[in-house]
Structure formats: C-alpha cells, structure tokens
Length: 259
Length: 247
Image (cartoon, rainbow over all chains, first blue to last red; front, side, top):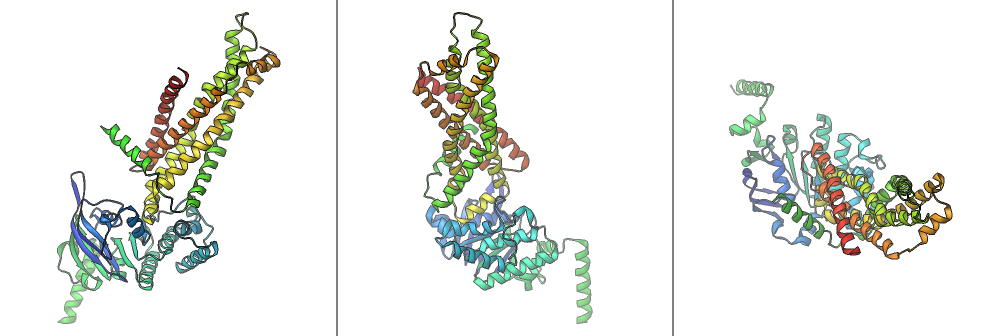
C-alpha cells in the first residue's frame, strides 16, 4: 500500500500541489485523473522521488520515503516499476537489452536465468518476437509494452504509469489498460496510473482520484463516478458537446424508463 | 549569482560520482563503450588535423628562419618537435575534441534527460551521475592522452614530410633537430595537459547535457555551451599549467 499525506509542491510562486492526501491499495489499479496542468504528473513524480515535495509524506508500506537515507531509498526504488508517458526506452539498446538492464544492474543471476526472465516478461506483454529490434523500429503501442516489461521484470511491488495510453489508438489503449489490470492482480502490485482518458477510468478505475488545479476534488471508483454530483468532475467527464448530448439523452432515457 | 549556482551544482555532480557502483561490470562496459566512441570515433579527424598542422608549422617556421643564413638547418626539426609536443598536440587536439566528443556527450545526455531516460534509470535505483557521467570522464582521461600522443607523433611526421617535400632541409638535418636537446619532461607535460583537458571536456560537457531543461532548442544551446566553455577552460588551464610547470 502507498499512502500520501498532505503533499505540497511549488515551482517558484506557483503552487502546483496543494495538500493532497490519499491511499493506494495493493492489488488494485488506482487512477489519478484530471485535466492537463492539474498536477497529476508532478504528484506521481513526487511519489517516486523524482521531485522533492515542499512538505508532506509518501509512505511505501509504512516506510516514509523522504525520511530514508540514500541506500534505503535505493532499496525502495528497486521495488518500483515506472512506465513513462513516452516509454523512455534507451535508444542505443535493443528491446531485449532494455528489459535486461535492471537485471544486469541489480541481480547476480546467470546469463541463462536473466534471458529466461526477459523472455517470460516479453511473452507476457505479447512481444516475444521483438527482442532484437531497436526502439526506433517499433510502434508506440509496442514501446509501451516494452516499457511495461521493463517495469515488471524485477517483480515490483509498486507500479506507476504516467498516461500509459496517450498517443495510442483506442483499441491498443484498451489492450494496454487490460494488461496493466491483469498484471496488477496477477502479482498483487500497488498500481498508480495517471490519466485523462475516461475510457481507462471506466475500464480499470478500481479507485479514482480526481485532481483539479492541484487539489483533490473527488475520490471514488468507476461505478460511482457517473453518479457523482460534483460539478467540476461532471464538467471534466462531459467536456465535449457530443458527450453532453449523450448525457442528456441518457438522462431522458433513464427518465422514460423510470416513468 | 547564477555562476555560483552552476558551479555548486557542478561540484555536487562530481561528488555524486564517488558512490559504490551497483554492478561494477556494467560501469566498466559503459566505460569501454565511451572509450570506443571517443577514441575510435575521433581517431581520423585528429590524425588528419595533426598531419596538416605539423606540415604547416614546419613550412611556416622554415619560411621565417631560413631568411637568416646563420640559423642551422636542424633547428627546424627541433622547433617543430617542441612546438608540437608542448602546445599544438595537446591544445589543438583537445580543442577539436571539445567540439566533437564534448558536443556529442552533451547532446547524448541532454537527449536522455529530455526523453526521461535519465529519470527511468533513477527510478530503477541507479546512481545516474555515477553511471552516465563517471564512465565518460574515465574514458576521456584514458583515451584522450593516447590521442594526444598520437597527434604529437603524426604532427612531427607531417612536419618531416612537408619539410623534405619542399626541400628546406635534408632528412638528416630534420632528424638531427628532433634528437637535439630532447627533454622527457616536455612529453610528461603534454600528457599532464591532455589529462587535465580531457577531464574538463568530459565533465563540463556532461554537466551541460545532464542538467538540461526544456526541449530541442535548449538541447542545442547546451551543446553549444559545452563546446564554448570547454574551449575557454582548456585555454585558461593551458596558460595556468604553462606558468606552473615552466616558470
């Protein structure tokens, strides 16, 4: 489980996070959603220590990350998998070498053991035939899969995904979401996902945190979200005219049905 | 004020190099890759430039000194040798390497920063300064002195070839000049300069790339700064070393 308590972060005079507290449970996909500029990425970067919050705590199974010393933090980080928005693959390495890197760096396994593990995770994400390809030779969806494979290769306890399906077509995005959900359940990982994609929210949002201008505005799950009375959330979900019309139609149908 | 901020961050980066490697083998592999990039990658340009610099130095020196019939012929080899070893080979080669290897380091690291590859390594628990900057500095201080030594040799070869071809002195006179009053200390000084310049090129260029913020425009600016600052520091430290060693 990951707990965050009263996280605040400013850049100069601009306060980007204004005291956010939340809990993210193990074995569940927890989504942080909000419009662009709402502070999602800053929050997730504060959680993994890429940014130092001005105040607040991040607890990994009761270990206060920012109170740990350098080597203890390193130990926590080896338990974290992170999927970046652009996948952040190493251009000079093949798909296989990208996934192999954490094992080369942190394990004393034999070459055969490492190769076996890499083959396992690549197969798990559906990329068994892409080993020798370079990042520049694969599609955006495949790059995301490689990113996921690299993130899970060391059996992480915590998985962070920053907008995992941005730039992907709806079908591929849906498959990436499904994959993350399956892996979360399979390995009982605490998964935190940043998104502004409502399809993701409705598909895998077992727990949903809605941010607005750096504040926690709403918390719930995918089943509760449509029934929410929060005006800002409603505005975010039904942002386009098409969706507003769809919502009106849905209400009318609901009205006829109940009448 | 900004200068002190950057200088402080530069020192912190250097301090961060002294951590225990997560896996020594991986750091060594990265060092070998960098040695190949810097050494093999820069061999041709350094060789070509050195040959011509030696040749031009010899021809121009001959033009200046042979107007005076009192100057013996073998002086040409002597002057070419000492000019090359003391100044041209280390300084000229390293200025070229600042442009080639330095800008390459800066843009490679900057690109890794912008595309979040450095963040990815950090989240894995890897000491990014030590893993990315350390091997570049180590590889530079190993390989660049070798390139400089080669540059010194090829400059003298270029000078010899140009002198013989233009008929200013005989082969015997030039070689006699090369052997006259040879001081091993000059070669040591050349290598000391090469090590210092190599450290400056690698550390300054890595710093510029490692901490780049923004996008492709800032990345280009960082590469330019890497080259400009490296060149200025090379020339400045060249003067300091000369004053300390030769005064």
